[in-house]
Image (cartoon, rainbow, N blue to C red; front, top):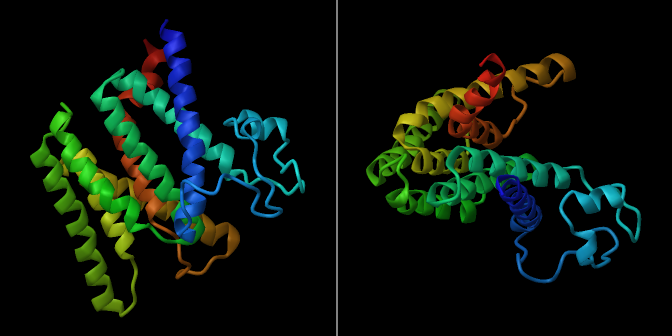
Length: 255
């Protein structure tokens, strides 16, 4: 029964990932998430239900549109796979219940925000602002965090990056961080609490510095090359959320 439940959770995660791909494509373009149905952006061919099965359809179609044979972006199976695995780890960590739903929604928001930021270098308010509200209100039912810790996390997360962005602008007269990043860390603080905000910011800055350094070293990117910070904040938040279960998995061979 346990393995069947895990397969069900994985399938739910993959299906949510498929919907997140719709959000990632349509939200920045101001398109409806409901209609029209999914179609190939190149030839306009309507995607049939059997061509929209998470991961499976991508493999069967060999990564190409069945109409015009245009390559399907690799982002689609990556988002589906990431969401599916994340849901499975959340299930292992929390079981089924309020905490699973709360953090599954959180991870889904982070994935959508990250890939939109990578593609368009924006973090839509229509995701981050409702996310703040859900984070604070949902904390009422979650044992890991109180509603007051959630509110403090929202204020601390948004406040720290606002001060950093304002200070950078005063020193350089250039915008080094957008308002979307500020709202994203506020949302993360709302879900994880104020105690996790410094850790998330440290992990986000560290991973961003590593990736930025590699781009400068191997691709010759300039020092002022614009790199979206949202995915790195999301990475820091995900690691902070999953850390207990990741430690358990990594230490398992030593037991």
